[in-house]
Each structure stands twice: as C-alpha cells, then as structure tokens.
Length: 112
Length: 110
Image (cartoon, rainbow over all chains, first blue to last red; front, side, top):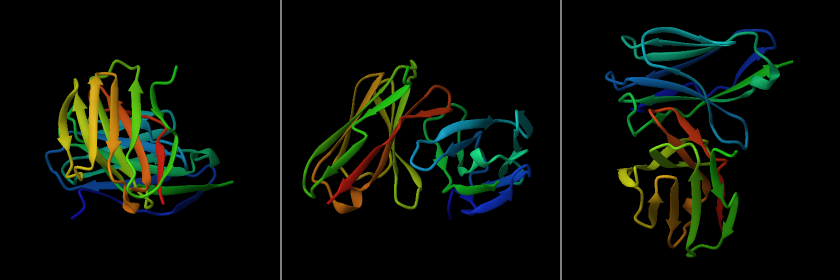
C-alpha cells in the first residue's frame, strides 16, 4: 500500500476555473502536510504547508486537511496557464521530523 | 543568493565509474537530504542528515555514500555506477519540515 497517494492525472482545467488536487495518506498519526509544485525540468517548490484540520488560504491557493479521513487537498482558484505543473503532496509523520514521504504527483494542465 | 546549490547540473558517465555530487545550502538549516527522482517522476528520500549526523538511510545500496563535512554541505558519492542509477538527484534542506530543494543533478549512466 502506497503511503501517500495521488491521482497521477493529467488533470485538465480551463483558465479561470478552480483546480482541485487530492491526496490521501496511510499513517493516521501524520502531523504535517505539504504541497509542492514542480515545473518540468525544475526542482520541487513549496507552495503550502498545513498542520491542523481545516482550511488554510494563501492567495489563490487553499489547502484543506481532514485528519479523520486522512486526506489533504489543494484548491487553485482562477487557474492560470502558468499553474500547469506537477503538484506533489508530501506528508511528515512528525512536525519538524526528518522523513517526508512524497506522493507521485498530479499533473495539472490549465488550458488558455 | 542561491539557497540550495548543487554541482554538477548534468553528469554523464559510463557504467562502473565512480562519481560525486556536491550540495551546499546557505539557509542556516540543520537538516539536509538527498532524494532520487526517477523517470516516472517519483521523488524518493535516500538520506537525511541533521547537524552532520546521519538520521535516515532508506535502504539505499551501499554504493551510495553521503558525507556531511559541516551543516551547510552534504555530498553524495556513488561507486560502481549502474544503469539503474540514472535519475535526477535532488539535495534539499529544511528547518522544521518545510523543505527547500536544489536545482537537481541529472545523472545519466551509459
């Protein structure tokens, strides 16, 4: 069983729409959760972190965490072609812990 | 201003050779990592160091040997390179979980 699961996509949305990316994890005790964006040929870049249940908003991005259901999601409002990338969900069993487990990523295409 | 840097950016070599990749961070972080990203883009942790001490070694073949001379540097030496070692290797650093990645080293073993 994969520890962090994501739909590989590709997820295609029109420009201006809301893109919804989902992730589930297997370790119920996980404490910290991250979303990274990776453009083709580039390194992963942190865009959101979330540590407690509920929503966390940062500009056009909203991370949602539901520990009871063991899922974390990322919403991108007003999607732009520049948002086209692979989005990696990452989970750490401990806050500030040394091992982060990454999902395989979801490829997002935003059509102009 | 580069936060996490790696050299070289590209590495092309023959099977059986030994090669090294260097990583440096100027963020003052205590923890550094090596990740391998294969052709399917799956990012997998290889090693984690905290204050120069090895914390995580994820069943990586012992042909891979990390070395951390100080908190700001984490190098990766690979002996007897194999075809399956071809991948992009990312160095990262963190302080409290959020990680910052280097630009990656694309290793091609022929």
